[in-house]
Length: 112
Length: 117
Image (cartoon, rainbow over all chains, first blue to last red; front, top):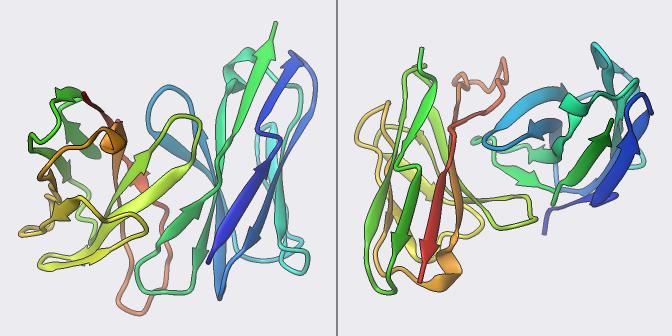
């Protein structure tokens, strides 16, 4: 059975800190790994990773994938209160329908 | 573009009642999905569709039904509501080419919060 595990489940830091969120996976026929940010409602897309070792960056957020060790990390530098959210990791196996398996999420709280 | 829209936003059902959660997308996406998210958990796939007239089960399909008569609409039906179906339901859509090139991300609707008492 395909499985995605995120850690930590919850994290509280002060504004300006740097955080690293972890995602490990076991999936047959890996295709891609995706990171989403979920505030109060729908998840919004952050990154899609398909190749090992290639960092994706968007402002203060970055992510990298290790297909040998089966994990990904999401880094947020110089955190702001607006970064407070649940961060979801999802993995897609090679199938026709982009069926995603989600981890349970990491709840990140940034205190001023 | 409205993207993915869902109705209703909230609903309370009694055990044994039925209802349909509506989902519409205006992005001409061929793939559509229904997920449920229980408190403190990630999303679990209920059903998905790769095009009009084609649907298939996801991870947790029991107690639900879907149909896809048009590209835009993908309603989710609960026939006999149970307390275990209390959850937030998200509809999503994406575009995939026939040869699975140009993978696109899934775009999510705002969700429907359902409580079964």
